Length: 195
Ligand SMILES: C[S@@+](CC[C@H](N)C(=O)[O-])C[C@H]1O[C@@H](n2cnc3c(N)ncnc32)[C@H](O)[C@@H]1O
Image (tube, rainbow, N blue to C red; front, side, top):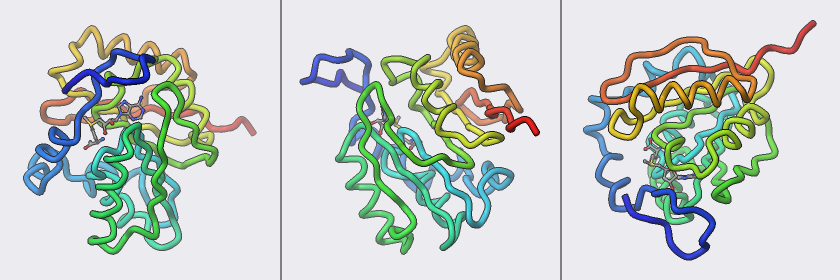
């Protein structure tokens, strides 16, 4: 991890390409099995968001799960991640289902609404956690789910509690806390529209 330089907007540490290359490899399947983790949320035809997608470990797996009728918005602050992700997606034959989206540090800026979003190991890197949850809540369709994972090394129990308070203040409610080795995880829901 290093300090992002240049625009002076934030001193939050953003994962560099070299680190992403190290943890986004086939051995990661020992830790995260996207098919198993996400099968209750990502279905054929789903529209999904991978916030802080990095090199696309989850984006590419989800692109396979949503099939030809769905799509994945792969959103990241760093264009170099999106370029690497799309190269991998082309190799995997799913590039046509992935829409790369470059974010600003404090604004995701996605116009579509999605059925499901994942934010894996990114929330602690965002400069404004309250704002990120507010925006994520607005991108989810009513009844949509958000799966958040944070590395234990970056989120103590107390910090994760604050993160949950921030998500709740944004109108998201807790559905379940999946077990995930090395991470703290929660699935949140935007309340369904009232009849
Ligand atoms: C530790 S990596 C995790 C990548 C991916 N989610 C995974 O599980 O392999 C964090 C990613 O979040 C991105 N990121 C950090 N801050 C962000 C922000 N404010 N908005 C969008 N992406 C951000 C970084 O560029 C990096 O690609």
